Length: 270
Image (cartoon, rainbow, N blue to C red; front, side, top):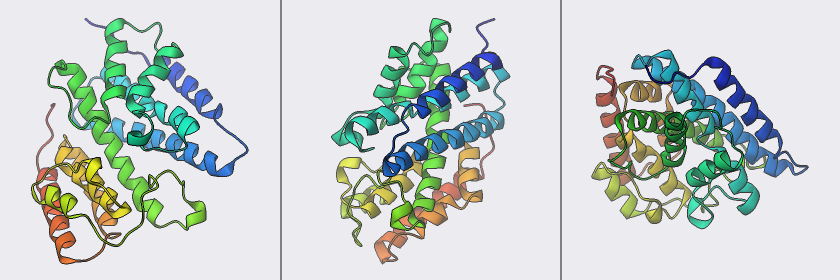
């Protein structure tokens, strides 16, 4: 039998993460809002991970490893914001790769078996890539797919809530400093019509970024992920913040139909 993570080990990792988050608190409330949004996001992603691993019947030890990945998936965001005052990877640093570096430099995973360290680091460093590398082994691929779904579900929540907040209460970095323009880029809408992930390079506005996020439905992996997105009204909520012109409405219909069809599928261990 291979290594099985124990709850005591996960608790040690939780304590380290809480202490790490506290180390970023400053006297600047605007900065603190951006750090806090990532700390709260992490808590929700851990909750999503528990639901997803439960839906596919993962054994307890594997579920704890998956939660460790959820706990650390955005650990690089804190140092990223401290250095660059942004959450935009394209103009700063890849926050997934930086997260792996933070864990290594702080020796957070020391004491875990090499295979377990590798699984956690793969989950952290690959959670934000455009496509997962095909050469991952079966276990690491499963973890990577789980964290990507758990993460997407909560980013949708963040954006639905963000849109409803007055500007002074918003975490400034959430919108990536993109201009809030009324139109949506044709390249973005064309990607959605092809049922493809929108590439960040084609995004020119906050509305484009919302459509990029909605394109994530084409990259979700588990029926439970689709069901949670629909039950929580996340897709509908984010879609309601977009302009109601014909091309946008058509794209949103494609997204909604796809999500509803995948939600109806039965759960299976992927």
